[in-house]
Length: 112
Image (tube, rainbow, N blue to C red; front, side):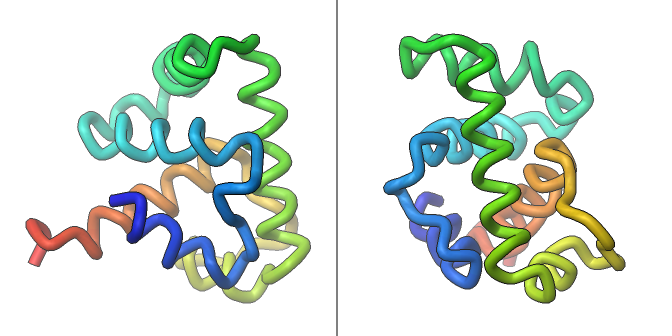
């Protein structure tokens, strides 16, 4: 799954060097298990990532916002393609996670 995420994020120049990358991959994995987690991002995604990384929830949130903003700054056209609808500003973290989770699920071998 991490290979798929790296491939999807390559056009946005988002790599594992970002501090929020582990939280991003954990959030996508958790969303693949239960898509309803996207409706409770703070408790279902940020908190487990903060616990796993031994940092504050606010740190996880900030790092994920940084990734989203970077993706928007680098390649907004490709982010619009990933979203599947017009975006006029950078998406929220929860929207970005939804786009990413949907694309990962589409590319997983079990989905074919």
